[in-house]
Length: 272
View 1 (cartoon, rainbow, N blue to C red):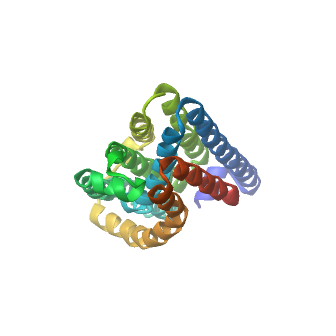
View 2: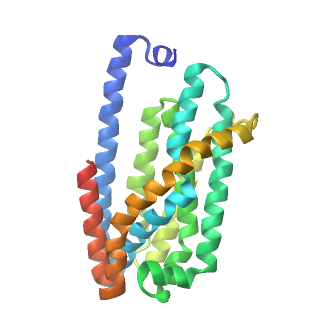
């Protein structure tokens, strides 16, 4: 079986599994540390409104992202691992099918956001004046879709170390770098983050392993597994996003940012 081949027997497998757990824990710790450091830099470089714009943008993005991503990270990881383990030889088509599904999901959400940017800004930020922030979301969504596909494929192939490198680059390095290189505009920070996620995630795609055989069946399988997870993810993320959004409507963006950051910090502490 795959585990025996990959890890070279029980002893070697146990050793490498421990290494994978350790490096995954370290990667998650780096992501949390970078998240906190990024907000510290934001607080130093922006006024309270700027801090609020960034904090609430991150919450708003997390709220709309599941509709675009369609839980492809989990679906691809599961399907690729199962295909390899059973020796079906169909794993090459899952990434291609995921790219097609992700493109559809991201396109639909992006078109709606761009077409109704003032309305979306009013709902998410409490004012139509924040439409430029909403207009930066499509690139962010594209980056999240590609990240989910690349990350899911690596996890499905048991390439845990490469998956952790991708996680660190996208979730720890890119947000901090975007803040450092764009000190005066939250919308520009979001655009740089999206661009970084797209570029890095695309670099981790398995171009030499892409296939189209049975792509409709693979896409159907991914959709059947991923889409039913979306409502649950939306509900969970809404519980964390709604406090900040409601405060934005009642007390302004500055107070909403503090609430959004606090809720996100509590969530990270709870999942650590």
